[in-house]
Image 1 (cartoon, rainbow, N blue to C red):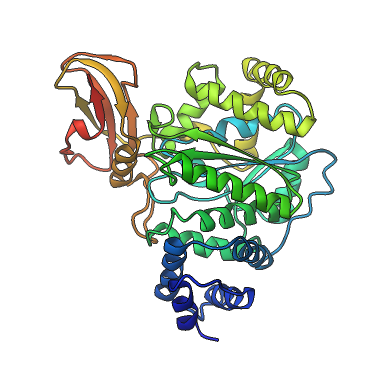
Image 2 (image 1 turned 180 degrees about the vertical axis):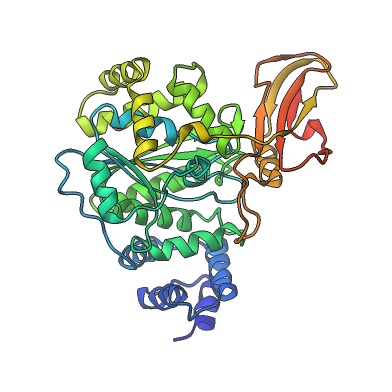
Length: 408
């Protein structure tokens, strides 16, 4: 067996055996196979797809590449939530403490950004001192103490996914439905939760551009969940426009805090919808009952206090959040109403400013990003500020406003 034969077999759209998948992926983890070879295999998978059997086998290989967490010591239901990622998607920072504040354990293994989409771990690392890498013992202890813990993948939990995830980010293979499903579900199953909620983002600013793609991923992940006997609920949500006003790591933590402090708007509405779904499946109550419970927790600042407790527990100083001093306002040259904001181009701009990774080794600048001063439906006059750029230096950014805002 050799990697070239395996690459060629998948390139010809033939089904790989479990032994072939084990050989390729486990040897990549052991560094016996090079980045460029695995990149070729990932691209062949991206182009030709995988059968359900290949996907079930690959999920199993990912899970068995490391440890599986045993959360049976926690007396109660454990629910995990994942988003496939989108521009400005800071929803986990709101719903994780919100669900935990309602008495349900939230054990969460999170990733870093993929392409133009930000990662929860990157956002949390914008808080000085915040420890994003927990040992299994630390993870369990925090769950027992406060009901919520968020950590990056430990070296022992799905280590294969960790290295493949980083490679996909910089090789144009982030949008493969089989690879997305394998990455998400292997982590969720190895993480030990009883219930899994997946928020599938769909649109220009997401990994999945069409409803058809999102539906395929939804069905696939629910089939994987059923195969592993895990209650798995997937919902599809819109990502044609950025989620919220802030894009960038520190900026997104700040906006999440605003919602936890009581700010109204679409971001709050989405958070309440997802949190009520998670509480509903965890407590076996109707979504209407769950919505009343999570709304009360948010309004009474229980969710905010849980978030602050969580940040402090993991060593973070919430007062340390900072944004770049180099700011530039982008003005409107026409009057009218904002009819659309291009999430894809906003995401690319944020990445260009330094809020995301273009190369595997790139370091993120946590202080840069974008604030959208005008949102869809807002009236605009000539000279109004459409967005504020937070830059790494004073160099002026030259751009075509029409690539980002539709004003009619």
